[in-house]
Amino acid sequence: MSLSRQQLTLIGIFALFFGPVILVMMMRSSWWQYQPANLKNEGYLVTPPTQLVLSPNEEFGKKWLILHVLDRPCEKACIDHVTALRQIHRATGRNQDHLGIVLLGKEAEDSDLQSRLEAIYPAFIQLSDPENLALPVLADINSKLADKSGESRPIQTYILDPMLNVILAYEVGSNPNNIHKDLKRLLKWSDQESKG
Image (tube, rainbow, N blue to C red; front, side, top):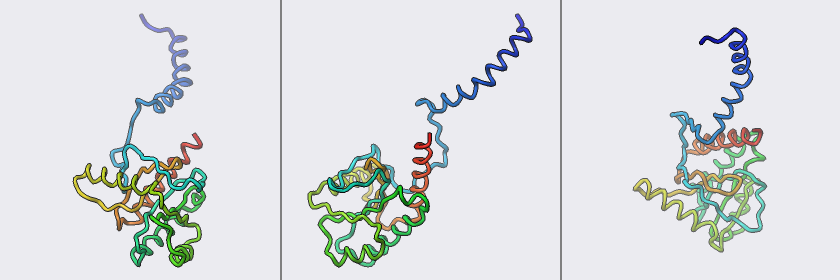
């Protein structure tokens, strides 16, 4: 049984108008899980993401955060890394308002170090963790990452999503450009999600 010309025209019109809608619905559905083979994080992916309590009194305004645990004492290598974090924040350009840099110490830092860090970049958010709300959780993340790889990795820098979930972790001495690459991808993805 062959289709008439009118039936073929009707099928063509249906495909033309509804085909793209069906394709978009399929691509946004949960079973369509395409990921390019060359997609690679520079940092270690924290799975599942782990939520942190940083400070009950601090509002972060739903920003992405780079969290860096300060060395005690914070000497040249520590200051150099903090300066690199400033450069990452500046390099985000128009996305600076969507990113915060948190410097976390176990105890309140002395006023001299606080002044030095503020002189490097006034936009730093300096926090301490005297009640051990965040540092034990970060130590647990580091331990799990070490168990997965079979080697110990001293990790000191993390990326947190706007819900304060730790999603990426970076070893001590990681190239700041790698952190910036991951952050650019995340901010771009986040921007697309908010528009979609």
